[in-house]
Image 1 (spheres, rainbow, N blue to C red):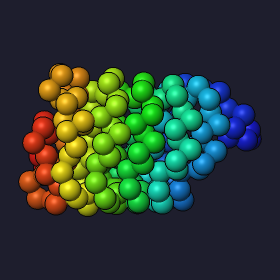
Image 2 (cartoon, rainbow, N blue to C red):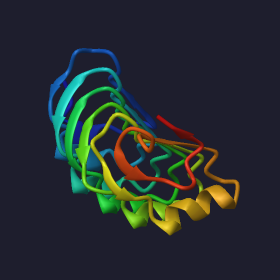
Image 3 (tube, rainbow, N blue to C red):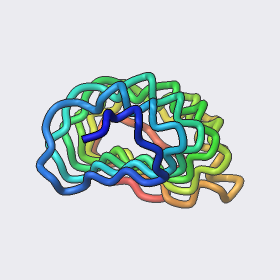
Length: 153
């Protein structure tokens, strides 16, 4: 088995494997990672800030886990991101303004998290520029206010 930092791959998929524990900080050592998929597992803990080192990341999907903490503001530094799916987790706090820096973002799924506050204008501007075409939150039954979501759950 190779140490995680020795990997060089564009795709890292561990979806539907009943994985437990947290997302390892060493993920940041996979320098050319483009797609990270860990959907439908039992991953918990926060998203590590070291994810900001993944400058080539285009898809980050961790749907249906037990990820907690806040949505890291450092995601806003990953300018190649086109899809973020953090739906059905335990993320709290508000949607960070920094997500509005992601000019390539076409899909943002945050439903099923106890998020609060108002979606920032910078994030909403991505929808008015027809870039962000899929944006889903719990704005009808939750504590989050969204004037620009494509779908409110």
